[in-house]
Structure formats: C-alpha cells, structure tokens
Amino acid sequence: MADLFHGICLAPALTGDSPDALFSSLTRTHDEGTAQRWIDTQSGSFLRVAATSCTVSTYAPHALTFEEAEELLELTGVIVARDFPQLVYDPKAVMGDEALAKGWFIGSFSSPGRWGIYHFAYPDWGDSAGSSLSFKAPPTPD
Image (cartoon, rainbow, N blue to C red; front, top):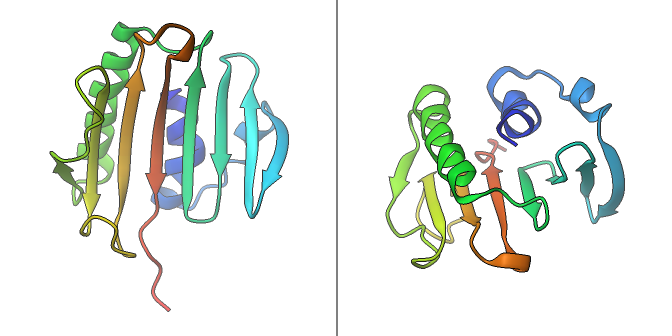
C-alpha cells in the first residue's frame, strides 16, 4: 500500500515522474467524473486518482491488520517528514477511538488552499474493516 501511494500519488508531485509503469500492473475499473478508479489485484488495494487528489484504500477481506495499519501510520510519518516537511500535524484530524487516524496539512480546515496527507485505518471492524491513505495536492498558482 505504501509503495502504491508513494509511486502513484506522491512521486508526480515530488519529482514530476509519471506513474505509468505502476499503472501497467493495475486494472482500471471505471471513471468517476474526472477521477480514475483502479484496483491492484495482487494486494486488493483500490486507487482513486484525480488531478489534485489521490487515495489508496483497502477493504475487508484485504484490510490491513492493526499491526499493519500501525506500521503504515509510522511509515507515513517518515514519508511526510522526509518529503513534505512543510506539512503540519493536525491533532483534529481524528476519527474516533477505534480508528488509527492522523493527518498532516497546510491551510485551515475546509479552506480551498488546504492540502496534505491523511492516514485513516479501522482494522478491527470485522467485515467493515478498511484503511485509506490520501494525498490532496497543493493548489497551483493561476
């Protein structure tokens, strides 16, 4: 999940590299407006890729375990510190006591200029378990 997120969601913003090679191993399922939907049949991960946002998600029965979700959260923090040091941890970006959620952003909540990275996992929810790792790109100057 972390490799897909970094290669498809973050690399274009960081280096301008095209994720086309990674897309070749995925199956495109459908378009949703201007966003494209993909599935990685190997991991069971789903991707939603749009011009200014990108999310990699998992759902039961392919959801992350609690330990995997904790590991991904820690790795996400390392990626943010290394690649997006300008992002600030937002203590309000939580989703209750039963979820592992953490977000790093610039901009106030609900503002058009808000961008950042958000990790959300709910591994102990049985058949409803899942996780998502999302990137909202910074606004581009007009």
